[in-house]
Length: 330
Image 1 (spheres, one colour):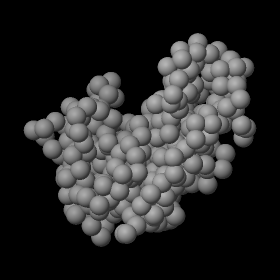
Image 2: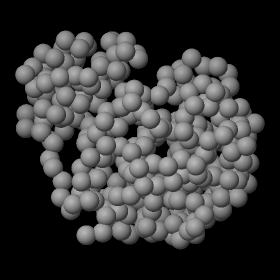
Image 3: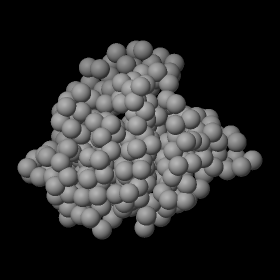
């Protein structure tokens, strides 16, 4: 059986594997990234950080960018509409946390991001994308990559122009979420777009796939159908950071091991522990309600557990809910 699990080079950065955690707003904090890394993610991206906020000195950006314990390599993703601001933001990122990579978000479909001239707006405006990526490339000594959408809408499939602009600007890799801005997160991701992008970029930069990759079989199919260099898990990793371990096992052997429920709970508590350190117990416990619900999705008795979880306010509450299932925390 052909193994699609392999190393990948992003400019000067060498990674031992090609299973990545995508930048997910409101989720890819360092607590979740640490758990994903411990469960086999080869690389992870922060949730996107506003270039404007970085330049203004916003206190909220520091925690978003902070490296997770044991995170030997990671990427900080930034978004912005002005090349000078993005360049300064990239310099601040590098000076502050020294990530191994800076990623430019040119794919976010959220209206307020687009109205600011960032996110998916840039996929539709390759000249502006070029200016922003070029400015970032010149600002920092680490690889700069770009994430785009397949296009603005069904009538404006602009990824070829965006890919060419990113290449010309010096991007070290390109990630494509193969839905349009208009689709948001609805409908099906078009894998043929990724295959075409891989062909267009062949021999120049690696192309990574994003969108509708929820499990090991999905990852295998995307590798097989597109020839991409790496895949990104987003929603597929929520409540299931073990997807990285399972996917690696599946790509190498053709089978993978199911995860015991107790181990899922253990991972959730490890995530809660670091989140409490970063945000305080009250806020961490509120944020972990949705995350615990994701961890227990599909398990027997899950409905009653979820009912209890949505009212949890302290770490003690969570311990009372899960009782003897708690084996340890890191």
